[in-house]
Length: 113
Image 1 (cartoon, rainbow, N blue to C red):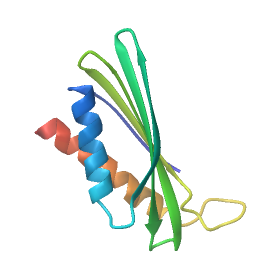
Image 2: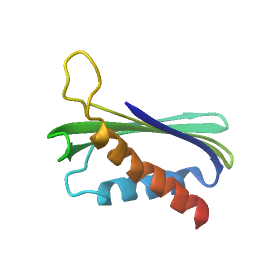
Image 3: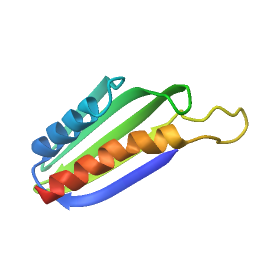
């Protein structure tokens, strides 16, 4: 498992669309599996689940991306899993870390824009 979290300022819907686009376009094997949106007075939460094939691990890796926002205060959490081939311990997590980089780079580019 690999994890990336970041607090930032911006527009909730813009960040959600930005990250989604970058992840989908980041690899030919990425697929959008499902998502959920939730609104409370003054705040929003979006959860997205992606999957891709990892050449390094020879298996599929999933990534859960959660974005929470209240006004222009945003928080993003991305967690990958499924990249290990071992039965009892984690081994060869390169696929997870590589997949996570798509999200991390997307957020960094959003901040720099």
